[in-house]
Image (tube, rainbow, N blue to C red; front, side):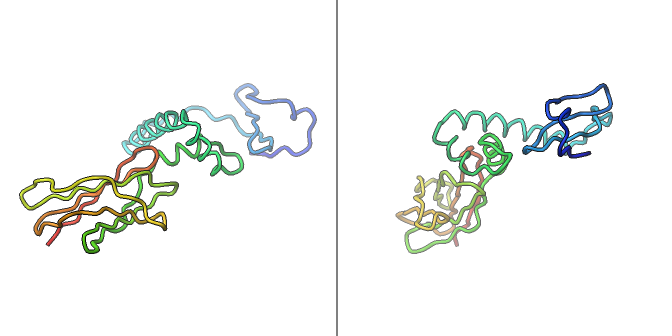
Length: 179
């Protein structure tokens, strides 16, 4: 790979020359490299899974970018050589992380983070018999990381199920057993 700095001829040339060279521009620099062909190896199971995950992330990103506010948000996060689509795919590829679930009096406090933004957190309180005694949306705290859900009771032997979602609606589920 070579970076072309000052050549009048290559300033206007882009594409492939035969089966030997490819000339392209990236981040304002002209790059000349050996032409690559398709791989002759059969993809591994992990590669196939990664391709499927990327296909889904790309489709979700395209849907998210139809909303002008979301598109502006991602564009504001884009760095040099990036655009809103790149940021949306990156967000859609990963799910948020639920770091902690703790109980404070009659409140469930969830600590959830995402590289971009956690869009919503849902909480379900289930008693020992498997009956849902409370469910709903948690509200974001002042620090932007904690989410709060007020509950009427925390049944002994039951559990709390928390679902955090990012802007691409990728869910992360975590459960806390009550003793």
